[in-house]
Length: 375
Length: 170
Image 1 (cartoon, chains in turn red, purple):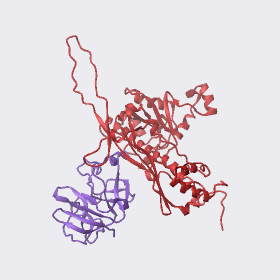
Image 2 (cartoon, chains in turn green, orange):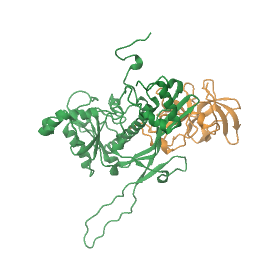
Image 3 (cartoon, rainbow over the protein chains, first blue to last red):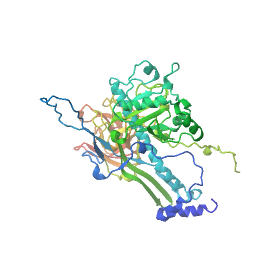
Image 4 (cartoon, rainbow over the protein chains, first blue to last red):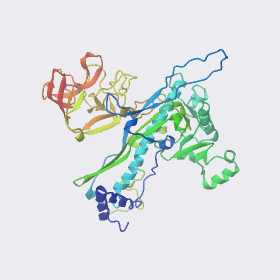
């Protein structure tokens, strides 16, 4: 970055605050720094594509100043065979509906004095601005994952006589728990050992069993969500799984298709949110739920005396009206069922929000190599 | 009722997950607006060891003052949609609690036990059955020897049952 002195960058930071032109120029100075970890767009947006809504689409409350959007669910109906003299039974129509509440997802509020910005040779405000958009989408994904887990557990709870029954290898093998919305991977059901949380490789029949959880309930599997590490295990499938042609192809190029066993799949590197060993399958969004954006991501930057502040946020709502439209494959033996978890279950749950964004590099501890000491 | 007299802009708020506290009965969710033990604006929450918010006390009127943990006023209305929209882990309380976290401020509230209070008195957070309704809430009250001070009385409106106070920690 020979020509991009701190002085130039400082001038650009100030321009950015004051003009749109400066903001564009800053983008030219990216890519000159070491990245810590991959950031990717939201997987939740691929499962349920967001729709823009406006205030006019929403309802307010008489008790407070927040908003919901009310979504209708199709009414129940059926037909019947009757004789020429017969008469059908009646149904007084009452279609259910549900509310999707809106809330804010925000970046941190960043602050820095303009003097200290001089010490940076990378456009730090621009980098944080770009990363903030993806950080916000990480929280979208965390919220989404917790909501779909709630759907899964609600179906399990109901199917097990309104009780939380541990969904672990011991109970599954003993037929002591109903497998309504989740299924264990075949590799996790082998006998012996503890109900632990070691992730076993995914097998082809696991995906078929997962698909059947929807197709057995008059729903069509459309999208599958898994982590990159779980997807890597697909590459271990043998010629008996892939066939000769695919095996040759895969051994050179990896698996390059967007579909697996007739299902579109979404992979994510965010293994701190969607933990390895959890694979979900969804119907199309019209059978499942909605993801609304009330306000697209906004970026605010200001300067008070010599201190620069910036922050990004968005206002969204997501809600799932048909809890039967998502099912889960667990590639580990233990139970993550609420209140009856096995020891170590947290390893398969999204990490706490405050633990997201942890840095992989240890430069702050002096761990860069070769180590160079100053005197 | 809990109304700010000071400007909102200068007060730092904090959003943290809500957990079942010592003052909650088993099976109750204080963030659920239709729960019989739902939080009301003006109740004070304590912070636990994991920096989560919870209702302190023991749900018995007059027994437990806040003596060891920092407490903050829950600055939300019962049933807010934004709070209900935020997820929690299955089996845990969904949503986050927003409190007034840092900074001195002036406020007026009827979530207070006026017994023994005089202008200038320090107040703590205590278990109180306001109005004798059989619902114990964590609200302001005259301080005992052990209680932490969370505010001082500026003005008492005995007829309305309200106090105007300044948030002070000591």
